Length: 313
Image (tube, rainbow, N blue to C red; front, side, top):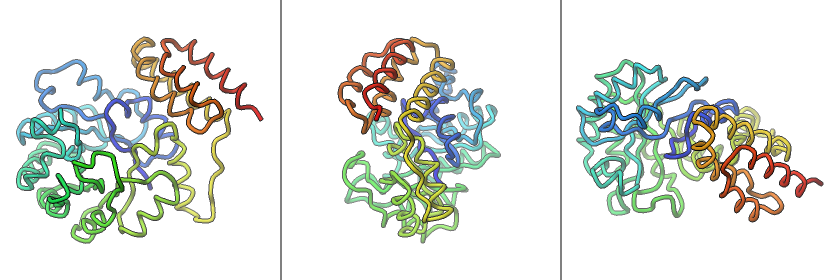
């Protein structure tokens, strides 16, 4: 099985719904600031809106104070998520600067305190997403994962890169394997899974219970369908989506964004998604440039028409 990883500015309700329909085992929201929850911030509340979700979805929170994280989790639990995910993996400076995200991995004891506080505040499953470590000299995923398990975490997701790697280089799957061997709760592997073969490879090499996909799903929500088919029968490789299928899903995806957020805001956010859907198509470079200028659904419809004409065989 494969789940959709949380990605800021990407895993909104529309993308979660598309990936869920394609077979994602569950999806995770964009990260939600526990501190902002204290002030009933409107933008933060929008990130937690589950009114458009149909499949299992976890709400992810970030912060560095156990009490604040617990209060946020309790508020979010009232919205009906499948569970709460604790962010201990984001490498971005604006998150790590105040001590949240992957900065927490420098203090395994605090990681345990946060998980314990969140677990005590909600009756839902609590998962944690971590990295291999803060940097190459401090690879401590096993220690952090054990602290989280001891505090009551129901599962741990391990991204096989350190914070200083950001999203560069190769993910270290051996770290994921080590965490799996050390824990009794489910372990989810993350990093460099982009297709059925890499998903099967990670499961075999690490022993993890399932995989989580982030960047591999960008412009390619079919990856969940393909992985599910492959894991059911390794001789079954699904054909890639046709040009028509790709364009129809892109149109529906962006249409849902407009329905949920309003056309003006949604089209600005949809530019990157439209560009991702263009990957591998004839004339992709030019179409991506046009995608970066979208401002209305009518613009997208014209782009779709031109892409279709250019790529007909």
